[in-house]
Length: 396
Image (cartoon, rainbow, N blue to C red; front, side, top):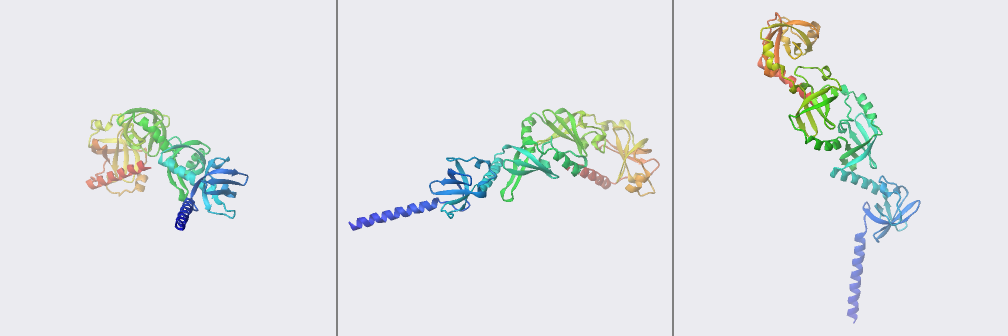
């Protein structure tokens, strides 16, 4: 009989120990995010029942949170809070809506980024690098490069003060953005308006292909090319080298904003469309040998003075180069000396010394100068310099 009682006592002890063990296993630790049900609300505190394990209290500054979901709580509502202290002076668990709200809102940003969600936002400030954006309860940053084409500041010369003026005009604007970078530990939130625009363009882009001809309006001019709007809010770039067959210093030499143009799609790269106007125009170099001959002396206009020589305008379509070695038999020309001796717009007599239609090259020398024939290495170096210059302009 005694043994039976002892066995029952041992079983009871074991059961009790297991219950105690389970109880403490369920207890959260400091820093944990816990869920509970509101059991009381007053002006200075909110109390939660944490799964029947403990009563938690949120009070003072810990009541205020970045997250809107903690406002207007009432008895019976579910809520989440962060554990500050397992047991306070009153035997209650000390909790925080402030820290929990911070965590919740950052988790929301990460989820929006992972799910590629488009969200509403508001421009609240501007600096030279971009815009400060209110997104839900947080303030994020949108670099200038992430603006959509309608808001992007196309400022000639990239003047930072004028860019800032343009960006300030956007303050107060309601926009749609995507979250593209989140780092809670650094409180870094980067958003993009351009990403929303790109998604909207994908369906429209599918209706276009390389080789298509489009009609549109010149929407902006920059040093490296012209932007053309066409179709349903589509926009493409015509690089300066694809505007006309002859060399120009700036797109404004032949185009102005508002001009109606026809262009050919020559490349589609993700959301970027590249156009060409000149490819819809007959290449005047195909018939250049019908108009000009090697050895022919012509009177032509100096179009530009370059470090390597003079750009000569033979007519509206054909431009040639008088290399600096073809300007004198006695003078070693520098750019400064050439600018002294030759003026843009001035007409002089030149002799044609080479014609290369496929390369769009025509060589000249000043009449009467014996000149020097360029070596292949010099020609190659000159071509390379021009190519590098074009690539630099494309990257702007």
